[in-house]
Every structure is written in structure tokens, then in C-alpha cells.
Image (cartoon, rainbow, N blue to C red; front, side):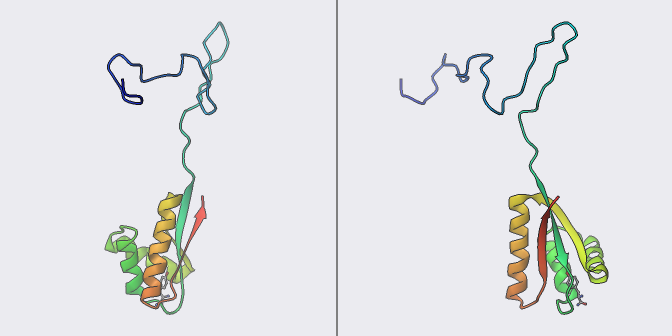
Length: 126
Ligand code: TYC
């Protein structure tokens, strides 16, 4: 047998029944009036809001394009968000897990820098 390779008859689950690891669900056996509590095995990831900030120089059209391309918005939604930023100073582009939010912020900042616009994009933990 080659070590590490599955052969028929081998158990894929090496931990014996009932063995507990940190992070494993708490499982209690129902017994009389004892309540049963379970804890899900997976944790929900933290979510991050990504915002565009207003400035006086970035063309409206550029912001609409950013919202379409980076945030997959329709032309109508992109225009609405751009106008929200223009009027109030800030607008929500989407909510993402950390790495996706970080990537989108970097994409916006890179496109803005390349086009020499002062557009700012920030993220904030929800
Ligand atoms: N205020 C800009 C203008 O009048 C438009 C703008 C909108 C800039 C949204 C940035 O995130 C922004 N040209």
C-alpha cells in the first residue's frame, strides 16, 4: 500500500466516533428533559461594506463605468449610486467578504490613479 493513497476498504474518517476537536459541534444526547444544543460547524465570514466617496473632479461618467465594471451594476443602478455619492458625499457599492472587498477597493483605486482622477473607495467592517 502506498501511504496517503486511498485503497478500498480504508476508512476515510480516521477520528473515532465521539472524539472531539476544538471547533467541532457540541452534541448532547437527549436524555429525559435535558435540552439538546448543537453548534454549526461553519462560521459565517465577516462582511465588509465598500463605499465610493465624492470629490469635485472625477467625471460622473467615470464613476458610472466603475460601478458597472467593478461592481457589476446595471447602467441604471450605477447612475443612481453615482448620484447618491454626488449628492450626499458617500454611497454603498456592495457588501463582500474581506478579500473580495479588498480586491474591489484596489481595482477602483488603481483605475482612478491610472486615469488621474481623485476618486476614493473605502471599506468598512459591517
Ligand atoms: N462630484 C463629481 C462631479 O461633480 C462626480 C462624482 C460622483 C465623483 C461620485 C465621485 O464617487 C464619486 N463630477
